[in-house]
Length: 549
Figure 1 (cartoon, rainbow, N blue to C red):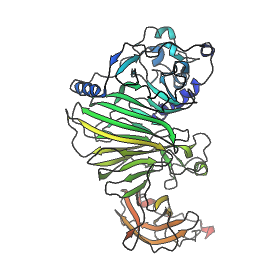
Figure 2 (figure 1 turned 180 degrees about the vertical axis):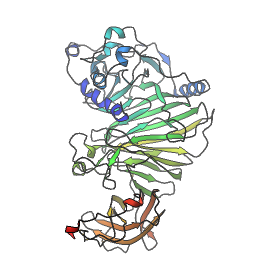
Figure 3 (figure 1 turned 90 degrees about the horizontal axis):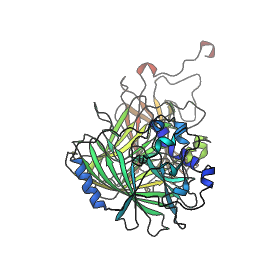
Figure 4 (figure 1 turned 90 degrees about the vertical axis):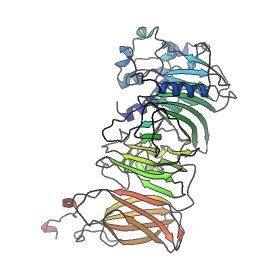
């Protein structure tokens, strides 16, 4: 399976969980306690000590084999395994506001994840052991006889539901490696977050995907609260981590949030440590239509990277689907926030009746302690469609990550249609590009300009008419000419037009930067963009046939 198929699995499984079955209908009474293990003491401090101790030991290796009847499942068969909602973790509490169900091990999800139930005080844990009675197998083709006595099989992860939609539409999902995600108020999943990223883009090094290998899920207090804690142990060849999540499922102003308190203990020196990593998909949009091969005007889970830098500057960076891998690092110190946003919220933007891209959430990272110097890294991968996540974003500390150290990062994740904070300056609304070198309002027909160039149109919203604006434009190569400022009453802002002319045959990416000033005042956030010039032989306009001249 590709990454995107893996991430879609939780939504598909939730749908199967809601399918009635004879076995489920027969369950007239609440089952015995879901957590059937012996009580053991627990604290986050002890979990941190355990993680630090494990980091001093060699990595235990890849997960062991799982029963063949599970390992050989096809994606369709795996998705037919549904959790029995009558065995949800807190099903016995009739007044519960949230509940938890578990993902079955199988197919590509071969890591045996141990899950423990914590009491309300958070100081006593009982393991939830696997048993087939927790699941409805439908016609998935699983030999359940082969699963008897496999109480150490564990689970692949878990998902969280909010009342009254138990077993129908999950709010949070932890599934696969250290991936997790949430719906952002519109009932749709989109981009994903991760616990940790290691060596995502380092020459000669293969990316490492750490695993959450154990979770401790604490019963809400009070019992009808929509907020609760989850603790996790992360493991990989290069590092061990102790995590404390606070999941707030209450849909306040169309968003849900997670607080993350993470302690990382490296087993060895790490070249690239990614904090608060997230993965998304950008196939095509108004600024980059190279891969728009269907009738859809745009296809993406996120349309831009947004940065609120430590110095107060706001940056909007539209995403690309490049022809070659592109890696950019945006240096900062103690960032105030960053994220991958999906700001185009109209159905007309996508015309998509299946994936509903206009409802995909944005994800905003709000640091809660001092992160120091580092950079927000952006990795853009070529993609031919919407089935692969080709965008990766994360924070990389400048300090060296060395064996035996402890690294502490606290942050809050906001899953919502729009980020929780917004610049008071004019916001970048849209980015477009096309043929340049001609007067605006005159579309070239049989005659084209003699010199090839590229026109960019950048829209800034929420500025009054009649301002005296001075666009501040800089480029890393080539030259800019024919700058125009046009007020557009339809979006109550300004469109800045300019033509970019190459001054060499280089096809290296061109970095463009634009913001608006009026006198000494800065009026807009900063627009950053990366343009990929075509080969010199392709820098030409269409040639009309002789009989058309």
